[in-house]
Length: 459
Image 1 (cartoon, rainbow, N blue to C red):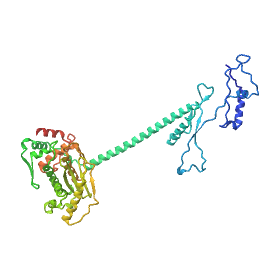
Image 2 (cartoon, rainbow, N blue to C red; image 1 turned 90 degrees about the vertical axis):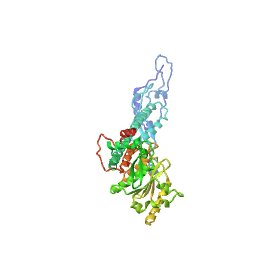
Image 3 (cartoon, one colour; image 1 turned 90 degrees about the horizontal axis):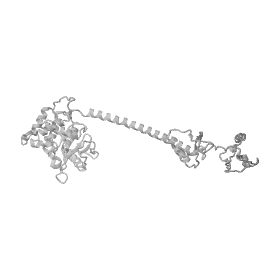
Image 4 (cartoon, helix red, strand yellow; image 1 turned 180 degrees about the horizontal axis):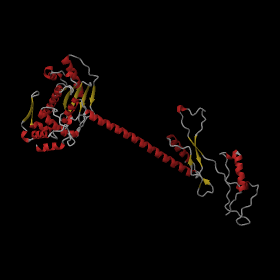
């Protein structure tokens, strides 16, 4: 097969000619490809064909094939603020990514082509977007010379994108971790400051033995305690409602409310001034045509109570829902009506009834007309929830216990076994929060589940 040869000297002349004429360097200037001769017959074997020196083909064949100018990949112009492109009006220069040629042999070609090296390419998000648009532009080219360039640019873009996302993920994770630690330390500080050890004092061995005897079968019919002010009698059978799995009855709830009031009288500086209605008050209040103030008017006389309800910071009202106990609070201190349900229930009727009652009560006892329309009606959401079907009564009386102390509700379902035994002890002593305090050590926990289990088994 024959082949065309090139004249090196003429090639040098071509280089000088190419630099001397700008038109040849223009992107629009193209040189026709050299004709290939698959076979040529000559008078001698392996000899180049003889061409006329004046032939155009002969002249072009002596020059080396011209390399194309550096490709210019145009990306869209950056969007400017206020809709203005530039101070030059509608003329603007699009962003350009210059691609430098690196010498690498392309398979099957005699000259050098480029895999690509991109300059002026940074890790900033705006540059990454421009690079992505540049990749879309390059993908439109069908010339095989652009395939290595496309692959290289794609690799750099993907690598930069992954590193940027990873860096952002790390930064967000660090911020989230710092915020969680700050919130956790704040919660711990609040718990230490607001919740003293007093509501969780562990039972002594003597108290455990006393509770076990009260639960024994020999004391079922015996009257264990009598509360003279309320004329309440508690037998061993009544006290069994404080064993695990049992529903609290009216006698135990009403006696515990009396003990909370007596606790306040003993130490008025330590506790809020409160009034505790018994479990029959709300039923009596709504026994008429949905509301009957006259039926409870005499329950709160000055002679009977020794104080006026209008002077109390909080008024606690037990509410019974057939098989479920809830607590309503007339909170004068914060000017709101509150409803606490361990199952997160809501009853707007209770709020309206108590609002009307409080207005009528103040009017009846002091002759003053008050307006509670601006008071907030709050269904307390951030409260301990019961996880079974029998501890609603315990949750209700502990809501009253903690709120009358001015404390947050810092207990949960796990504390109920301890609270049941503690309530038995306080009823047997007829004294809420006995003044005797014992020092807690590291070997004892205020949640005495195992001792409680032994007490119940013994009975």
